[in-house]
Amino acid sequence: MKRAALFAALFALTTPAFAQVADTGGPMTDQAVRDAIAERVRGGASCASCDLFQIDLAYQNVSGRDFHGSRIRQADLTIAIADRTNFSDANLSLTNMFGMRATRADFTGANLSGASLVGVHFGGARMGEAVLTGANASGAELSDAIGLTQEQLNTACGDGTTTLPAGMTIPRC
Image (tube, rainbow, N blue to C red; front, side, top):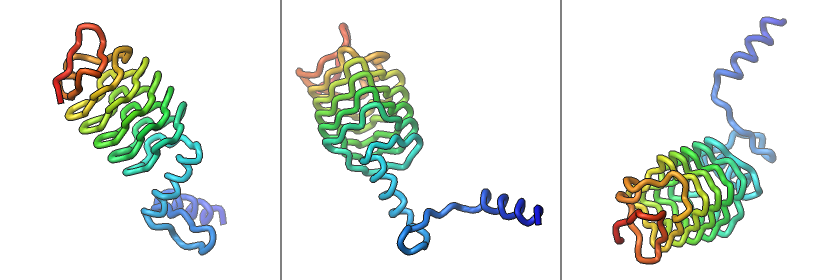
């Protein structure tokens, strides 16, 4: 009997897990799982290392949450508040962050390639090793960003209203 219980436990740990739909008891589709995770995030949950591809968090307050290592590619974070949020090592490529406030957020090692950073406030945000290739930082407030390098800025673009740390420049969009 103990051997059967051990076998059942090992089998359960080595087979793919399927979330159950509460009302039907059947397995959820991948899309249903993603939708359920997105609802939890919209409801206030952190989600480190999650697949949040194309999630809509526009006008949401995600402050203080942990999205370390998550895939947040092509998401909408328009006018979101993300103060003290951990986006380190996250894939935020092609994400729209128009007007987002990210005071003291952590973007260390984040992929922001092709992202719209237009008007984002990065006051005290950690930007070390963030990838900014093709990002549009027009009007972004980067003057107090921590760890930002000229090499990163050379791969992005901005305009005359982009604020930068002293001595740094950004190519025009």
